[in-house]
Length: 301
Figure 1 (cartoon, helix red, strand yellow):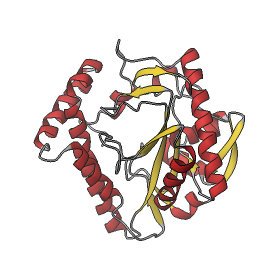
Figure 2: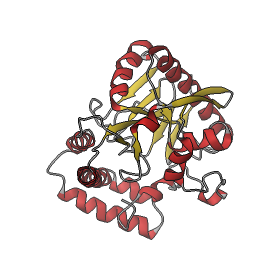
Figure 3: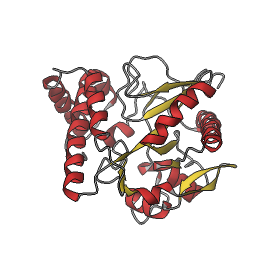
């Protein structure tokens, strides 16, 4: 929800003595680890016949820069829900000695709606990392969920998901209110934090974990594989992330920072939908997105 209660943009630009700037050698170290992680994921997917696609800013980087966006410090991929459920046990079996795996269904204290694999021996603590302590450099995997062919049912599905996501967001803000206020400097962001924390207090009849699992259940609510899929945890929320299944199912290998990875063959329409028709235009420095990183150490990763 991008409105007066949204903290989405503000939280991407937080900066204080508590945050770490991902630039220079630190950024180069992070990107090197991420590319190695992508190589591991890609190798398992290729050997196991599990389709995926680069998504979000990583897809944009592949098309516009031939790899990671130069100032980016994360990698995003997307998988159909059924393929993700095949991927996770295989990845645990083959790569569990090198990675922690966080999922909203299984990981205690994990309030995100997508999966993260995190590199052991490294540290990259993000704003939403609450209490688990497994703070390795993360690679994000976004589930592509079924949604309804019926426009009416699809809209109802979207509204319910957005409502549950907003409730979850308020519960998370309540849990981290003081820390968020210490990081947020803009008056509008501080107002949104206070108001969302107040709503989160009203919603505290259920735990943060219960809100997380309830939201996930809502996102997964359509059981039938039809024409459309949605990435409800993506940057476009629900209605900005609806795609034809067939378009997202077909992908090709593309160059990516000296290696290669899979990208949907519908990359142009995907990026236009997510970033606008001028997605190939490099934004000025002041408009470039950065994540709020609280600690970074490349360690032995």
